[in-house]
Each structure stands twice: as structure tokens, then as C-alpha cells.
Image (cartoon, rainbow, N blue to C red; front, side, top):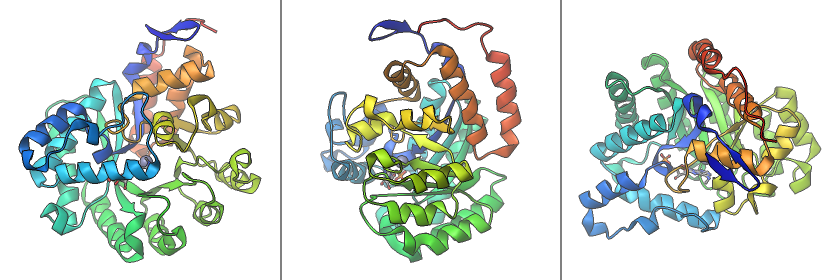
Length: 354
Ligand SMILES: CNc1ncnc2c1ncn2[C@@H]1O[C@H](COP(=O)(O)O)[C@@H](O)[C@H]1O
Ligand SMILES: [Zn+2]
């Protein structure tokens, strides 16, 4: 049972059916994996406090990006990436996630000692090993473009992602656009993103994560992407615009919403102010996600519980939210199977706690 203000709410029933659609690999590294990495590299003098933002702590988004730099120092060999990816997949499975879309940015050769191609192959190898070991989770991969690295690298990454989409039997399903949102402009990345879309990669773009990006968002929303990461400042109440909202609605583009990430990174002032409510009340497809479960010390169950307690959602509301996430996944071959599982596990009655 989970105590949330004025009522008890049990979300463990949902744990059997989670879907996680927005998880950055190196942001998802748990404390226990960090400990193993630190033991491998004691000379770096890195402590856990430098790789995670604990309960009650807040950071600026800029400080969050410093945290990723520290983690990247710890995860810089093929062995590290394989271990990290396997640990992350197992941890999501242990949290009841049955379908996971992981995303990660192939890094420059000189920071990892391996090519970007090898980086992606290593993550794919981790997914395959988990499957062979019987970990009860379906995993798909999105290759990430870091917006800081500009147009040329973005185009190279798209080509890499396309090659893997064609050679991995559907494990690589799409492209993510992420990285420090205050750096660069989406207009420079437009040709690469359009190429990705045209070759059949699904697109998930971090959009309007920070204020004053209406121009960029308008441009990118018209591609259109297949999902939006965050979209915190799209709606007019926070300085976005009705026309941006209309475009999202017209294309019915789902939003990936990460409550704790936004609160700890201070792009949203508190849980109750989170834009989840705006989109949820409108009935717009919205999927609860973790973003970086390691850095923000959370997991998907906790994010569902937070949404339930903050916005007074009933068990049935939560179940429906979790069900609708299936339609937002990038793996068409699995949708039917996931819906079937959902039907089998759906409780015959819900506890009324409102
Ligand atoms: C907090 N909100 C966010 N906004 C934008 N990009 C983010 C992010 N959280 C994570 N990333 C992106 O994911 C990388 C770490 O995982 P990978 O090395 O790719 O596996 C970060 O360096 C950043 O590019
Ligand atoms: Zn993200």
C-alpha cells in the first residue's frame, strides 16, 4: 500500500503491465551499478552524490547536464556499456516493465575507445543477452541525436540508426532528439530529422523542455514527430501558444511526461503544477515515463504513484492510462500482444478510493 495524503492507494496491480517509453540509458544507471563502476575506476574519485539527485533535492537543468558528464566518465568502455545496459534492462523488468524503449547517444570514439557503430552494437548485444537469459521484458532501442553536436553529426547518426533498423530485426525502431535544450536550434537538424522520418525511423523529439522555444517547436512539430518528449512549455498557460497545442492535437502526437525529472530539474515548480494535468484533462495521449531513473532516483511505479496521488487518479484511471500507452509504442508487431496481456490481467473490479 502506498500512502498518499488523504487516502491509501495501491498501484502494485499496475506493476505487472508497465510500459516505459522514455528512458535514457546513461541517465537510468542505478546506485548499485554506479558502485560497480566506481570500483572499476577508483582514480576518478566519483561518489554517488555526484551521479544522482536525491529526494527533496533540486538542480538547475544545467547542473543535471553536468551529472550526465560525470556518468559518461564512468561509462566509457564496451564492458561498461554492456553491464550498464543489462543492469538497466533487468531493473526495469524488476519494476514490472513489460515493454521498454531505451534510448542512448552513441558517443565520440575518443571518449569511449570504440566506434559509434560498436556502441550501438553493444547496446543491442545487451538487449539480446537479456532476452536469452529469460528476462521478462521486450526491449526496443532508439538511437539518440545530441542536439549539441550539430547538423553533420545528426545526419551521421540518422544513417547509423537506419542501418541498424534494417539489420536488427526490428530492435532499433527510431530516433530520439535530446541533449541540452538551451544549446543549438532545431532548424539546423531538420534535414536529418526529415531523412529519419522518410526512411521509416520513428521520431521522438524533446520539445519545449525549456521556455521560449515556440519557433523551434513549431518547426519540429510540423515534421511531424511520432512522440514528444516533455513538451513542458507548449501550452499557452506557460508561455506556449494555442497554435502549438492545435498542431499537437491535429497530429494526435503523444507526449512522454516525466514528473520527477521536470520537478528535480526545476523546469516545473512542483508536482501539482506539472503539465500532465493540462493534457490529461484534454484526453490527449500522454504516457508517464521516468526519463533518467538513476539520476532522478525514481522508477516507473513511483512515477505512476506520484501521478495518482497528485492528480487524484483512481485505480481505473491509472489502468486506462497504462493501457493507452500501448498505442503509443514504436513496435507495431507487439501492440496486439501487449493489448492481449492487458486484457488478461485487467482486474474485474477496481478499488474505489476517490
Ligand atoms: C533531463 N532532461 C533531458 N533533456 C534532454 N536530454 C536529456 C535529458 N535527460 C537525458 N538526456 C540526454 O541523455 C543523455 C544521457 O544518456 P545517454 O548517454 O544518451 O545514454 C544526456 O547526455 C542527454 O543528451
Ligand atoms: Zn529525456
